[in-house]
Length: 210
Image (cartoon, rainbow, N blue to C red):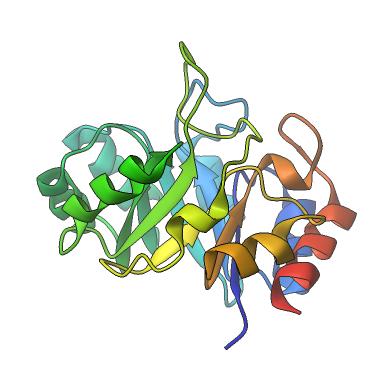
């Protein structure tokens, strides 16, 4: 089975069309104002209308019920990805606002972080392993940092997605090291923060699916 790919932080039509044409399986829309890649719900809905066979992913950080309700009403995402301090029980709540699934992001810097992710088994449909953000960071992801991807190899408590510092040059090796069947990139396909590079999008997807 070919590796599936999520391109996250989508904010313009050209990038969405390029990702879909290159074979992206998931398109991530960040609904979190502190992110440089944040988009308004209405804009995310417009862009999601171009997704073709890809799945839309609403990326949220500790959302309250009011925001989840707005996400459902305006965007109607296929998947909700929680990227904050949400509890396992909160993950179950959030799943009610997505058409298909709920993913929980877990920061990784060592083996103990991977072990702690097991508490989400049975609550999240998949675990997204991301690099731990810098101390004092005002957002939980999108920093372009990597980690030892082999730490997650063999994780079997739930399906997992590999994220954190992935780019066209390292994604193939990261897949080999981790055993990931789904990979996610944000800054690795950008020419500047929040500016997607169409050539890099195509190169990343080709490298991940080869």
